[in-house]
Image (cartoon, rainbow, N blue to C red; front, side, top):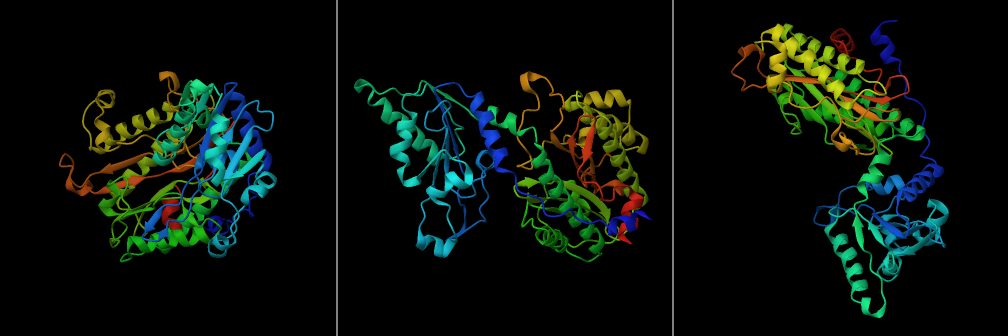
Length: 452
């Protein structure tokens, strides 16, 4: 069976189950175990954002809030109180309102929040000013991530100040504020089995979308028409939204890292770089392929493509538990710098060029980033100033690229304006890694065969 035949017969896995309620409960329990005794942690949901006048962008839940609660509505507030006798997880949410629900759909309401989302106590948001002040009072420490919502920051400080104003009457305000991000984001860095299933599905849908775009590509199309093919395939498989604005960059547009104009015609003889991923039940995919608009690489395009592919393989070879985060990047720098010298695009000793950073004129980003609920997911890369060692359960992208700027006068004109990036998604396993984005053409021969 040929590669093109095997790809055409690929099927998406069946519908993937939601994250089990028990997983959310375990996440909260783990977080509570990391909090100081006699403390309180406050986590806020996302808010609706105005698109224009009286219309909003589609609501997307805050990733931290979703990770801990699974609660789907805006403006809610989750409160965690280690050791509280009457329950350690308190949720504030919008009340049931028949008129609002007539226009905007069902609300969970406080009564159902405990049963459906595991809260120990739930109250209407209208009561938060009265109740939360009482929950904060007497606590030694408040865990809260300042700076995400200026409005809610102001409310938190108003609650604390109201307690401080009553010190003479015996009120006990908290003595410390601690950012919650480090504790929570360290937890999010390691994906559970249920999360990996969601990410496999996000990657599988995204693979289908890239394959569709590659098959549909023709000279004379607009970049946005290829983008439409991606979005169609995302939605058709249950991922209604892209994880980030799709990059569809024809020709020299590929040399702009975050190009999202997507409005130019695709020209025969050019490459097109597509960096796109769907979001499936909150989890992101992030995949890039670069391919010839007319279906065949030119000699120079193929040379840069093969060099980028070799760099990606070197990065894959550096992925394993116990290897540090930077090893894969260093491997790509070695391969790309040496290859650019072989092609005559750089001149000099390879070791010296690497030390001087000469490759950064062509390869200016790192080889990857964490992946999960956010496309650039949370987690420190250098905790304590040392590169983090890879461990099972970590999810990341592997995306080397080579970009010859149209303004780079240090190379022959025939090379200018060629940009190539190849990106795949992986999960670190006990023995190496799992390629989540398997099934998408990677070699130049596979790409050309699939496009035919």
